[in-house]
Amino acid sequence: MKTDILIAGSGCSGLFCALQLPEDMQVTVITKSDLESSDSFLAQGGICMLRDEADYADYLEDTMRAGHYENDKVSVELMIRSSRQIIQELLAMGVDFQRDEKGELAFTREGAHSNHRILFHKDITGREITGKLLEQAKRRPNIQLLEYTTLLDLICKDGGCCGAVVKKANGTLEQIDALFTVLATGGIGGLYKHSTNFRHLTGDAVGIALRHGIALRDIRYIQIHPTTLHTQDEQERSFLISESVRGEGARLYDKHMQRFVNELLPRDELTAAILAQMEKDRTQFVWEDLRTIPETELNIHFPNIVAHCAAMGYDVTKECIPVVPAQHYFMGGIRIDHDGRTSMKQLYAVGETACNGVHGKNRLASNSLLESLVFAKRAAQDMTACAKKAGSKDILPARVDLEAYRDSDGLQEAYRNAVLREIGKDYGCNT
Image 1 (cartoon, rainbow, N blue to C red):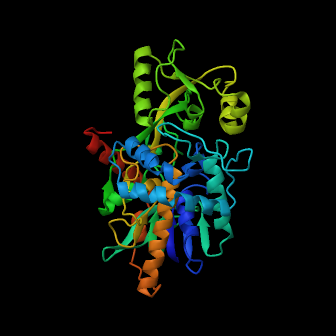
Image 2: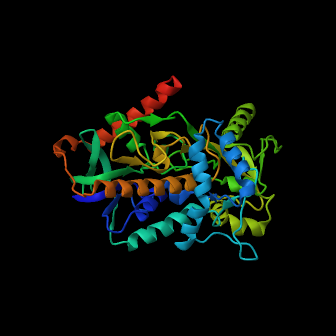
Image 3: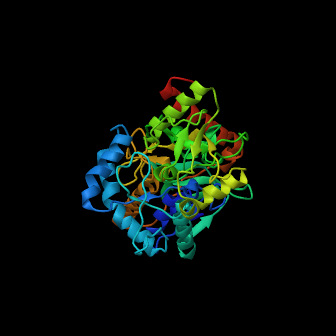
């Protein structure tokens, strides 16, 4: 199989990258599960946008402060400056953001934000954005979408990437030759006991990068979300109680129903405070009170959260809910420059898989969707420019022995173990 651009991952970064490429280029998007089982579809809170120049310095400072000033400042500046254009493109694709009574875009606020700058669609913003991107991708004749197709390895030749080995839905192995390959395989939540991520997101691309000596960055920076619904079922994906809930006034209580923390602290600080309180109280959770938010607002802004809690036996208009921290986001990943290039020629990475330092040590709420879209577009533009500069679309494939990949389950387990070892190496432990 041959294609111009191979994209591994069907989340918002992979889809937006595909949509930014010229329609005379053949684009193949593969995904390990079905097209909607990406963490992009799970994002609740929203997407940031620079409202006006008066907010620029504060937005920059909020992002840098949340990241403990370990951010790449140029990446942050590019993200913020690009935000208005990205939002305009999403609106043109039919994305429906909440509007006020005058028909203007409505903004909310989340933890560690000094101003209201977050656009949202109820509490399913990720589904609204990524769903509309998927609709657009399905309409493009140059974009091929392949479900249940697992990335097993990169094909390398002369120091560059020229495609990948994949396992298809029927179990057959296939070599896909490509001019450029994009890694957009999401996060690493499937490696954790408690995570908001889909279980099949196990850091495959990072494991493959380790196999080929591709540079990583900040791999130890893993964000824990402070508030997920506590359940006894450890096999279930942790259900996120959006930061927007606290942005709209929800409170956190200890076992005596006493407020113990500023709910709008950055995620890492709030997580630490919750864990400390759990240890002090000798409990497995703390309480979150949504009754501080008017019932009408709860039903309009957070219908998915209200419905899920009801299904789990909690009426959020009458009682508190138990919440506990869980793994949520991977700030580190495959090192990229500001155009999505990795340390291997012809190989790019975007989204949660990639790390250009924009988030630093801790991601500011609702910067993930924006960052993914901004740098996915930049990667697409760079690949387009490189293809034009080369003046040829001839793909020179490398010979691959597919028999070496018959034990695909064993290979994927090896990738998972390699990622865990690398994280443990940075932390000075074994897991």
